[in-house]
Image 1 (spheres, rainbow, N blue to C red):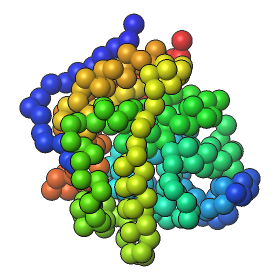
Image 2: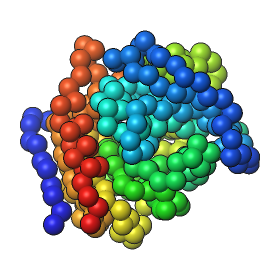
Image 3: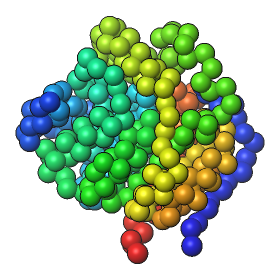
Length: 297
């Protein structure tokens, strides 16, 4: 029987083709800015005509982290990586047009993101993994399953509405006029910290914006086709109402649902929702560990 874990609190306001099996560059680093000074390997790999940046932490079963739109590895996952790396081999990537990865002169798609991640994992010798995608990263995780199901062991879809009318009313209003200045300042700063090229920041913003302007999502039948264990996570004041998260849970046969306090990304202390440099991930990391460690039936 599926499990639904619901924690109810007062809601907060929601915030708005070269495939080379070779790692291009890899080196061992110690990043003093990482919480706890976690040791990691970083590198670039040739995937489908670009160089894709990735970081690897810890040891154990591979867990791939897929950041949100407009983000970097650190702006989405910095606060949870040290905890997850204590139990898993964490592989965090930066998708096309984001952070340190390469840029394409073509529209950005979740299908291309999925193919890039699959190619990178092949290049570094990972045949099967868990996938944890936040926001647009969850959309990429859905496409990874649909296009490369054989590499997926389990999915975590966090704050990732699966269809257009799953977003809260009015979410898409004003997309025609949105500008870089409306991008949350922490995400703006996080990009320039790892890639001090303001022209590329503008390109990233425009491609993320254009992809969301035409977002259609996936059909009920596509979600029903997901056969691996899946954990669906949402904030109670997220970009999608809890009812949509429940709908996703009912469509994906082997799924569990967690609705946590807070707005979009607050439960992982994502940079745009981090208040006073404090984070509280007390719920999410043990929940993820319990889900991933559970024996597959």
